Amino acid sequence: MTALSLTINGRAHGPIEVRDDLSMNDFLREVLGMTGTKFGCGAAQCLSCVVIIDEPDGTSYTNPTCVVPAVNFNGRRIRTVEGHAAGGTLTPLQTAFIEHFSFQCGYCTAGFLNEGQVLLERLAATPIPRAELEKTILEALDGHLCRCTGYVRYHQAVRDVILAEPARYLLAEAGAGAETAPPLTGERR
Image (cartoon, rainbow, N blue to C red; front, side, top):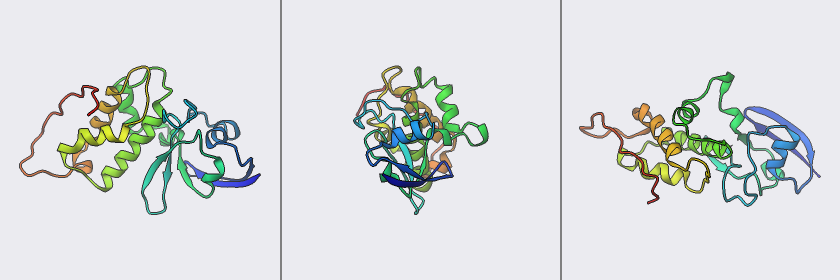
Protein backbone atom coordinates (compact mmCIF):
# COMPACT_ATOMS: atom_id res chain seq x y z
CA MET A 1 0.00 0.00 0.00
CA THR A 2 1.11 3.51 -0.81
CA ALA A 3 -0.24 6.88 0.31
CA LEU A 4 -1.28 8.69 -2.87
CA SER A 5 -1.64 12.47 -3.02
CA LEU A 6 -2.34 14.36 -6.22
CA THR A 7 -4.34 17.23 -7.66
CA ILE A 8 -7.19 16.44 -10.04
CA ASN A 9 -8.98 19.25 -11.87
CA GLY A 10 -7.55 21.76 -9.39
CA ARG A 11 -8.67 19.85 -6.29
CA ALA A 12 -6.24 18.16 -3.91
CA HIS A 13 -6.87 14.49 -3.17
CA GLY A 14 -5.07 12.52 -0.49
CA PRO A 15 -3.26 11.13 1.10
CA ILE A 16 -5.29 8.05 0.19
CA GLU A 17 -3.93 4.55 0.82
CA VAL A 18 -4.01 2.57 -2.44
CA ARG A 19 -2.73 -0.81 -3.56
CA ASP A 20 0.47 -0.50 -5.54
CA ASP A 21 -1.09 -2.42 -8.44
CA LEU A 22 -4.27 -0.31 -8.64
CA SER A 23 -4.44 1.34 -12.07
CA MET A 24 -5.02 5.07 -12.30
CA ASN A 25 -8.17 4.32 -14.28
CA ASP A 26 -9.55 2.18 -11.45
CA PHE A 27 -8.52 4.83 -8.90
CA LEU A 28 -10.43 7.53 -10.77
CA ARG A 29 -13.49 5.42 -11.47
CA GLU A 30 -13.79 3.21 -8.38
CA VAL A 31 -12.17 5.19 -5.58
CA LEU A 32 -13.13 8.74 -6.59
CA GLY A 33 -16.27 7.98 -8.63
CA MET A 34 -14.99 9.97 -11.61
CA THR A 35 -16.33 7.90 -14.49
CA GLY A 36 -15.60 10.28 -17.37
CA THR A 37 -12.24 8.63 -17.99
CA LYS A 38 -13.10 5.45 -19.85
CA PHE A 39 -11.61 1.96 -19.82
CA GLY A 40 -11.43 0.71 -23.39
CA CYS A 41 -8.79 -1.76 -24.45
CA GLY A 42 -6.82 -2.20 -21.23
CA ALA A 43 -3.56 -2.03 -23.20
CA ALA A 44 -3.10 1.74 -23.76
CA GLN A 45 -3.86 1.29 -27.46
CA CYS A 46 -7.25 2.99 -27.93
CA LEU A 47 -6.40 6.03 -25.76
CA SER A 48 -9.96 6.50 -24.48
CA CYS A 49 -8.41 6.48 -20.99
CA VAL A 50 -5.95 9.37 -21.32
CA VAL A 51 -5.82 12.21 -18.82
CA ILE A 52 -3.88 15.46 -19.06
CA ILE A 53 -0.71 15.79 -16.99
CA ASP A 54 0.19 19.40 -16.15
CA GLU A 55 3.91 19.94 -15.67
CA PRO A 56 5.34 22.64 -13.36
CA ASP A 57 6.81 24.45 -16.41
CA GLY A 58 3.31 25.03 -17.81
CA THR A 59 3.43 22.34 -20.48
CA SER A 60 0.92 19.52 -20.65
CA TYR A 61 0.68 16.10 -22.23
CA THR A 62 -1.70 13.16 -22.16
CA ASN A 63 -1.03 9.86 -20.47
CA PRO A 64 -3.00 6.59 -20.49
CA THR A 65 -4.50 5.46 -17.19
CA CYS A 66 -5.51 1.88 -17.91
CA VAL A 67 -2.03 0.34 -17.61
CA VAL A 68 -0.31 2.84 -15.34
CA PRO A 69 -0.48 2.35 -11.56
CA ALA A 70 -2.12 5.18 -9.66
CA VAL A 71 0.98 5.50 -7.47
CA ASN A 72 2.90 6.69 -10.57
CA PHE A 73 0.74 9.82 -10.48
CA ASN A 74 1.71 10.65 -6.88
CA GLY A 75 2.38 14.38 -6.51
CA ARG A 76 1.12 15.16 -10.03
CA ARG A 77 -1.43 17.65 -11.29
CA ILE A 78 -3.84 16.03 -13.71
CA ARG A 79 -7.00 16.99 -15.56
CA THR A 80 -9.78 14.61 -16.49
CA VAL A 81 -12.69 15.17 -18.83
CA GLU A 82 -14.77 16.28 -15.83
CA GLY A 83 -12.47 19.30 -15.43
CA HIS A 84 -13.10 20.91 -18.81
CA ALA A 85 -16.45 22.64 -18.30
CA ALA A 86 -15.66 25.14 -15.54
CA GLY A 87 -18.82 26.16 -13.74
CA GLY A 88 -20.89 24.13 -16.19
CA THR A 89 -19.90 26.24 -19.20
CA LEU A 90 -18.68 24.15 -22.11
CA THR A 91 -15.29 24.96 -23.61
CA PRO A 92 -15.08 25.93 -27.29
CA LEU A 93 -13.71 22.46 -28.02
CA GLN A 94 -16.58 20.70 -26.24
CA THR A 95 -19.04 22.90 -28.12
CA ALA A 96 -17.34 22.11 -31.43
CA PHE A 97 -17.52 18.37 -30.71
CA ILE A 98 -21.27 18.72 -30.20
CA GLU A 99 -21.79 20.96 -33.25
CA HIS A 100 -19.91 18.49 -35.47
CA PHE A 101 -21.73 15.46 -34.04
CA SER A 102 -18.24 14.10 -33.42
CA PHE A 103 -19.39 11.19 -31.30
CA GLN A 104 -22.22 8.69 -31.07
CA CYS A 105 -21.61 6.38 -28.14
CA GLY A 106 -19.16 8.81 -26.51
CA TYR A 107 -16.75 6.19 -25.27
CA CYS A 108 -13.72 7.66 -27.06
CA THR A 109 -14.74 11.30 -26.51
CA ALA A 110 -12.82 11.92 -23.28
CA GLY A 111 -9.56 10.84 -24.90
CA PHE A 112 -10.12 12.96 -28.01
CA LEU A 113 -11.17 15.93 -25.87
CA ASN A 114 -8.10 15.73 -23.64
CA GLU A 115 -5.77 15.31 -26.63
CA GLY A 116 -7.43 18.18 -28.48
CA GLN A 117 -7.14 20.42 -25.41
CA VAL A 118 -3.43 19.69 -25.09
CA LEU A 119 -2.99 20.53 -28.79
CA LEU A 120 -4.82 23.86 -28.34
CA GLU A 121 -2.63 24.74 -25.37
CA ARG A 122 0.52 23.80 -27.28
CA LEU A 123 -0.48 25.91 -30.28
CA ALA A 124 -1.39 28.87 -28.05
CA ALA A 125 2.15 28.71 -26.64
CA THR A 126 3.86 27.96 -29.97
CA PRO A 127 1.74 28.86 -33.01
CA ILE A 128 2.36 27.07 -36.30
CA PRO A 129 2.08 28.09 -39.95
CA ARG A 130 -1.41 27.62 -41.42
CA ALA A 131 0.05 25.20 -43.97
CA GLU A 132 0.97 22.78 -41.15
CA LEU A 133 -2.45 22.76 -39.50
CA GLU A 134 -4.00 19.63 -41.03
CA LYS A 135 -0.85 17.57 -40.50
CA THR A 136 -0.54 18.82 -36.91
CA ILE A 137 -4.13 17.84 -36.07
CA LEU A 138 -3.72 14.42 -37.67
CA GLU A 139 -0.51 13.78 -35.71
CA ALA A 140 -2.00 14.99 -32.42
CA LEU A 141 -5.08 12.79 -32.64
CA ASP A 142 -3.26 9.82 -34.16
CA GLY A 143 -3.70 6.66 -32.13
CA HIS A 144 -7.11 7.54 -30.71
CA LEU A 145 -9.65 4.96 -31.79
CA CYS A 146 -13.32 5.56 -32.59
CA ARG A 147 -15.57 2.76 -33.79
CA CYS A 148 -18.74 4.82 -34.35
CA THR A 149 -18.15 7.99 -36.35
CA GLY A 150 -14.53 7.68 -37.34
CA TYR A 151 -12.13 10.54 -37.06
CA VAL A 152 -13.15 13.21 -39.54
CA ARG A 153 -15.63 14.96 -37.27
CA TYR A 154 -13.18 15.13 -34.37
CA HIS A 155 -10.55 16.58 -36.71
CA GLN A 156 -13.03 19.10 -38.12
CA ALA A 157 -14.06 20.20 -34.63
CA VAL A 158 -10.46 20.78 -33.52
CA ARG A 159 -9.67 22.61 -36.77
CA ASP A 160 -12.71 24.86 -36.43
CA VAL A 161 -11.72 25.89 -32.89
CA ILE A 162 -8.25 26.79 -34.15
CA LEU A 163 -9.54 28.66 -37.20
CA ALA A 164 -12.03 30.59 -35.04
CA GLU A 165 -9.01 32.26 -33.37
CA PRO A 166 -6.20 32.10 -35.94
CA ALA A 167 -4.21 34.88 -34.26
CA ARG A 168 -4.03 32.75 -31.12
CA TYR A 169 -3.01 29.43 -32.69
CA LEU A 170 -1.44 30.17 -36.08
CA LEU A 171 1.51 32.25 -37.19
CA ALA A 172 0.61 35.34 -39.17
CA GLU A 173 1.45 34.88 -42.83
CA ALA A 174 2.42 37.79 -45.06
CA GLY A 175 -0.43 38.68 -47.41
CA ALA A 176 -2.73 36.09 -45.87
CA GLY A 177 -6.41 36.83 -46.01
CA ALA A 178 -9.38 34.88 -44.88
CA GLU A 179 -9.25 31.41 -46.35
CA THR A 180 -11.41 28.38 -46.15
CA ALA A 181 -9.83 25.18 -44.94
CA PRO A 182 -10.01 22.25 -47.33
CA PRO A 183 -12.33 19.48 -46.18
CA LEU A 184 -10.80 16.58 -44.33
CA THR A 185 -11.18 13.28 -46.10
CA GLY A 186 -10.44 11.09 -43.11
CA GLU A 187 -7.50 9.69 -45.02
CA ARG A 188 -4.30 9.18 -43.04
CA ARG A 189 -1.23 10.71 -44.62
